[in-house]
Amino acid sequence: MNEQLLSLTHTGEEPEKYLHSVTPPVFLNSLHVYDRFEDYASIDPLREGEYIYGRASNPTVHILERKIAELEHGSRAAVFSSGMAACTSAIMAVCKAGSHVICMRDVYQPVTRFLENFCIPKLNMAVTYVSGNDLGEVEDAMKKGASLMILESPATFVFCVVDLKAIADLAHKYGVRTYIDNTCMTPIFQNPLDLGIDIVMHTMSKYIGGHSDLIGGVLVSKDDELMKQIIQEMREWYGGILGPMEGWLAIRGLRTLHARLMQHQSTAMEVAEFLEKNDKVRKIYYTGLKSNPQREIIEKQQRGHTSLMSFVLDASVEQSINFINNLKFFGKGCSWGGFESLALMPLYKSSQEELDFRNVDRQLIRIYCGLEGAENLLEDLEQAFNRL
Ligand SMILES: *Cc1c(COP(=O)(O)O)cnc(C)c1O
Image 1 (cartoon, helix red, strand yellow):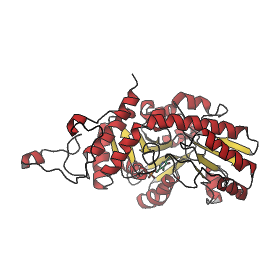
Image 2 (image 1 turned 180 degrees about the vertical axis):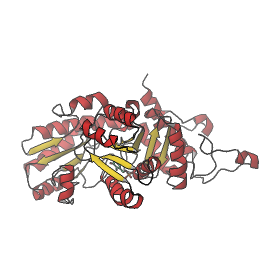
Image 3 (image 1 turned 45 degrees about the vertical axis):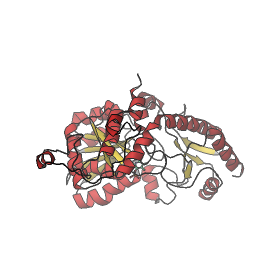
């Protein structure tokens, strides 16, 4: 039985509750009213399926949470108004003033900005950055005592991966909680909770939404007490729950997630192989390539590959800008995960210090392969190379 496909399509929907409607309604209500006060007073919004007020929970949103909890093999999921709301909630739930956090150097940039400009100055927290690939370095950092380790694998920009099971084992030994941004894998290709990671985050603004029409995030864990704490302290008190309309759109996105990913992956594989063969490409970073130096770890923990990749041309920064401007089907924009292909130079405006910190080139080009099909994207890339 393929449980994933059933979670995507059917889990949590209960059409018999909603006049047998094949899709669930969008519950656009802020509260739930009861005839008897005692019925109202007996509701505990921390219990699943009990509703009192929309900042605590909502029936449409809860269908989405049941699906994602099941897909990630967690006990419970909590959705937020954005990926960053989910990420910062996880950090704040686990840490307190003075906490020590270990963070992979390659994580999504706003996460390091949050640590550097909020957690350190306002909460006296300390952060140790590690590559994540050197387990000795990770262990040394954990030995000092840490509340949380922040992971992303494959990570933004050059898609390096880290051995999640090995890091989770070390974290258990030293009593460090672990958090991973699993957005570019989705639950379809990687399940970090099964490898011992404590908290998984997805931004639903990317593949899960899948149509470039919503902003949302989600946290999942096997630890029920932690999830209750997150739902109460981080979501109810900070107030960042996902709206019901966005919840409905994410449910719709999930129905086709598997089918879309198969298409994204096969297109990306053709594009990466095309780029790798091109002698104007100096470096290429894609987890799906046979030549990837981290292939062993990748095959151990991933079931598939994202349609994001990066490369560096044998060309100047200006020539690289011209190259992406010459691409017709790749829109110049941030984000990704929708139907439309994208190209940009994500580090174009970075300081030299940041480039050194991340060990990447300014003219690194990141492309996202959408759903236009390999034939169209390859033709487009070919003509841009001819004009280089
Ligand atoms: C976009 C993105 C985020 C942030 O998600 P938002 O919904 O925009 O807050 C976090 N991590 C990764 C890997 C992303 O690509």
